[in-house]
Image 1 (cartoon, one colour):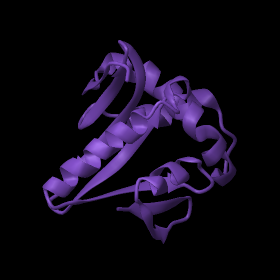
Image 2 (cartoon, rainbow, N blue to C red; image 1 turned 180 degrees about the vertical axis):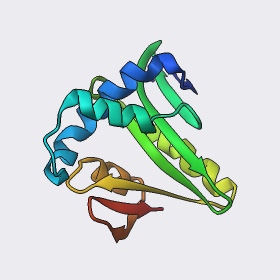
Image 3 (tube, one colour; image 1 turned 45 degrees about the vertical axis):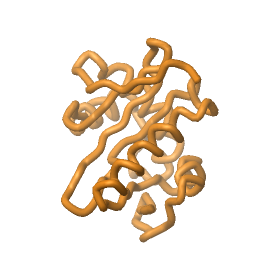
Length: 145
C-alpha cells in the first residue's frame, strides 16, 4: 500500500477541494437543479459552505488524493463530505479511511451516517461497507451503518 495520511484542511486546499467536489458531483446534482450549472456560480456557492473545521485532506504518496469532513455528535458521526480523486480510486484508499471512521465510531458507541446524491456511484461504495438506506430525500438518500 502507498503512503497514506490525512491532515487538517487548510485554506490553501480550497482549489483542490473545489475541483474534486465539482468533478464528483456535477453530473449527479445538475439534473436536480432549477438552474444551469455555471461553474463560477457553483464555486461561489461551494465557497460559502466549505470549511476547514473537522475536515481532512487525504494525502497519498505526498499528493492530494481526496478530502472528507465529519460532524461528530453524542450519538453519531455524520460524514458531510467524502471524496477520493479519480486518479486515486480503486486503490482501497476510500475503504481504508471509511473503515477507520467506522471502527472509531463503533469504539465510541456511535453510528455513522451520510447522504448520497440519487444516482451517484458512491452509494454502491458505501453499501459495500455495510451502509443501508434510512430515508430518501428530495435529492439525496441517507445511509447509515
